[in-house]
Image 1 (cartoon, rainbow, N blue to C red):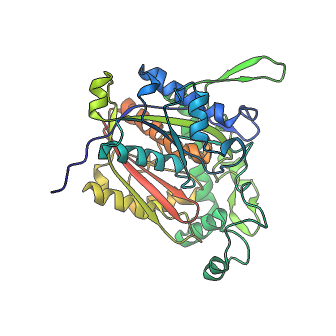
Image 2: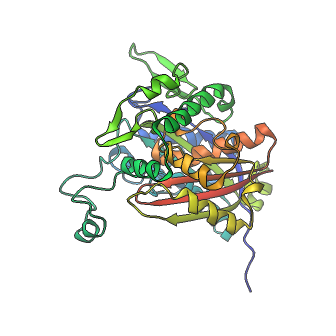
Length: 390
């Protein structure tokens, strides 16, 4: 006899403002950065942190202060009791959405009652790929031969170029979508304050500044400026810094509870998760994963794309959401309605839970019910989720 899975509810979802490379958060220790969001999601829910069964954190570049299981270190730095454990996971750009999925599965199975799924990445201090050295890297003889790597690791930018070529996107198509991201994100600055937990940083004159907005959004950019940018990668004429996600610093956290925990701690649920999926695709083109991940998560939920009110497809590069949009032919106004990573930034490990916070905020402010999230990932993977506002 198959036992029915329990429901898993979102009690709260928060994030830091997202900082530019070498920007507001260049001097913040990643452990403290994450700890600020763990503390915030507990304080806002008025629960004793000793009630937390586990903290699951997505983080990609697990070296330096982001190494040695940052989930555990941030939990202690947040002042949680020593009895609260933590673990760190890496599914590349979807790491904290994977953390959410693991947390939900723990609640659904009855293993957890109250768990925090979170994410962090300080890309200023821990650049992407800095955990891989020329003499110590994942390239094996088998991988090299199978994918003709010639000793070079898979390139996401090259994958983006290949996708743009496959779908026939012009440079103007990519830049026009990227301009849209900045325009929508800037128009949404007040909207984002509902999900952002401000962060106080030290200034150059030993003073302090409280940051409560995303640093990477460019309110004065124009389509003409974006079209004038040179290619950012050798031999890739379509991909520029303007139509790629930004190198960023950020952290995020989602408090997930069982029905029993809601009653025990007098918590109000804001949303529940309906379905998840995870897929693998060709690691060379790499970034097409959101397309099959969307199909799979809809199939698992026995839903049709027409039943979804809003979509968040991570803007790793402009060809990614544009290819997804071509395949699903939904109203563009339903896709990333407040901009995405091209404008806001993409702090790798933090992005998934950040998008959960944004989707929750979007559903509540619009009065709509159902949202779908899909994120492409390095190595040719993607995960997706469907959530329902309560």
